[in-house]
Amino acid sequence: MGRRRVKAEWVVLAGIVAVLGLYLAFRTSGRLTYRLPEVAKVARETVTDIEVVKATGTVRLARQGGGWRLLPAGYPADEGKVGAVLDAVSQLAFSDLVSESRTYSPYGLDQPGRITVRARAGGKVVRTFEIGNAAPTYRHTYVMLPGDDRVYQAAGSFRADFDLPPEQWQDRQVMKVARTDISEVEIVRGTARVLWRKVAAPPVAQGGAPAAESWQLADGKAVNAAEVDALWNTVADLFCVRYWDGHRREELRSPLATFTFRGTTPVTLTLFTRATADATEYPALSSQSAFPFLLGKETAEKLLQGEAASAVKP
Image 1 (cartoon, rainbow, N blue to C red):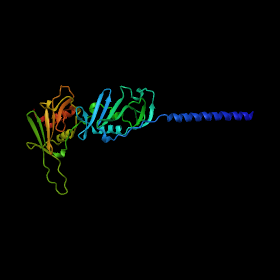
Image 2: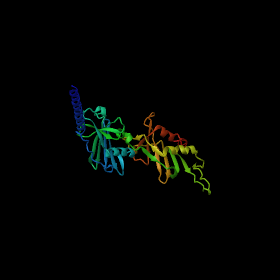
Image 3: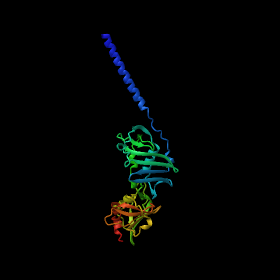
Image 4: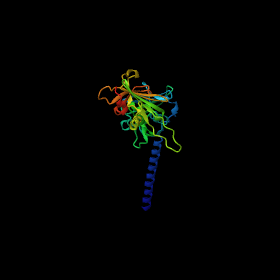
């Protein structure tokens, strides 16, 4: 009886081992029943056009004249944001198959949530894919390919790079002025004007420190240094809120104030009356921008209420 019992136990144990072996074999083979798609390489420098389609609208970026533009208006695009998109397009790679259930909402790939990306090189589509949510790891993104109803996990968390409102794709810097290049500032309001001139610095004695920068009015009176600093802090790197869609430069007339900065290359900034008294943006033009734009109220009123501008009676 004892030997039979031992033999029976060995039989049971052998059966368990066999079942476990079959389980592992099937589990392993199950993993190998799918292959991740092979994504063709796309060199970022060859991409000439990117289309980003969301439920709320479409953004189209095109490489033009050595930079990127937003079509159809032609506004300059933010090169840093375009660079992030080019990275995602050119480096697309899958790390896992996530779902074959055809249930897409958990992954942000249902119709309202998905973002469709099409990249072209010289008019030919070289990359198309659908972007869903970032994975819980925040190091991956859920992605689908055209003609494939499965959900994959792609390397990198890049949905936020594509999920931007239209104005955030814009390069909104409309003026850049180097203080050291400017020798004269003119502010005009109506028929009145005020003029600042940089005072030539006296020679520096051997071993001495250079004199502080100073400015004078046309009558020789000194300009308040704090007011000079306030003006430069505002205009040195000036960004608009957004470009003014549907308007052209020539439509803007009767300026509130014009600021001209003369130096190696003159630069001009012109502010216009707000559309309504409670509007939060001022229409404006810059000699460094081909498009009319809107400045935030706080920025515009810093300029208009500055000592020099407010002293000029229109």
